[in-house]
Amino acid sequence: MRGWIWALAAMAGSAPAAAQTIALPISMPIDKGFWINATDKCASVTNGYAYDGKRWGAVYYYGPNASMGPVAELEAIGRTTALNDGFTTMQLGPTEGAGYFHVKSLSPDRMMLRTGAPGPEGIQVMDDTLIRCSFASLSPKMQAAMRRFVPALVAR
Image (tube, rainbow, N blue to C red):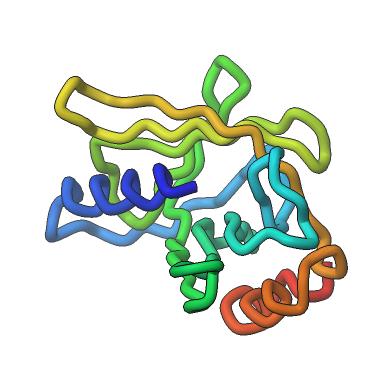
């Protein structure tokens, strides 16, 4: 999870300052929802990724025992591109940077998130298997975060 946050920061720093905004259709191989690491449990998770059809990003609590927050780092998806290996590239925002986010559906409620982040030795690739949690399966604490930052997912 933390790798995604660092990757987003690195990519934001590599984006050109003056960029044109062009609305392109978004076509993702995954359903809208709140996605968490496959090793976590929906009822006790304090961080994950939200996809509401237009934005992608982290929604999380932080600090000792996840006692602070919530925080959301959601970015508009500027463009998607299907790749030959079954992944789809998500371009966050209107410009492309050195890093990337690729998603691939493994089943309706399971996906692979491949994150490529610039590092001192080139692009560092991280693969995470994520599962989708229904709103009802989340703790009241995460439900409050979802209501605040991604209300479109509350009915799911």
